[in-house]
Length: 144
Image (tube, rainbow, N blue to C red; front, side):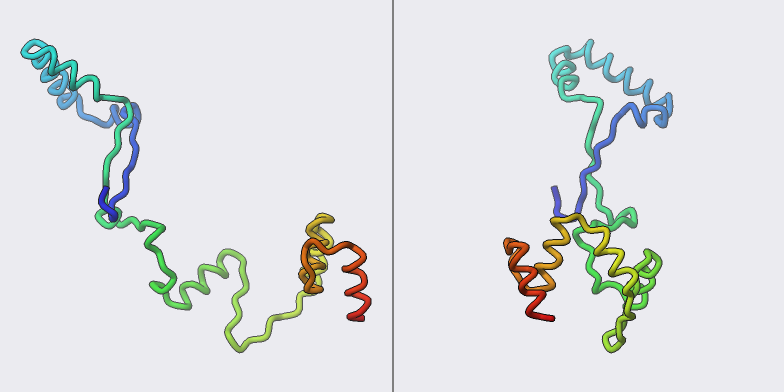
């Protein structure tokens, strides 16, 4: 497979109704003629036929993009910001202050499971996730 191409698997049952009858009749006629002329060759060809088949395409020929080739360097900053804000994210510039969102932070902390809360507190205190509850509490006391 060429590094720029992609294999697409297609089931013949998905496309058979799209093939004109004249082409199907022509193919059937050719296969029957081959069976009469050379039964062994017809059997060899039939052995390799299956309901599913692969087609190799170049995504650029169809205006498609291969996800592995996508880089954010190909986009303008305003395009990236627009896409992120459309998805519900807030984007801040390099020198902008982040708004204080205590409601979101407290909601996040309240919704954490106990082990995730412990990991969060370890991260806040700069401790290993293997720290005991007592070590976490002592570190919080020291910081207060």
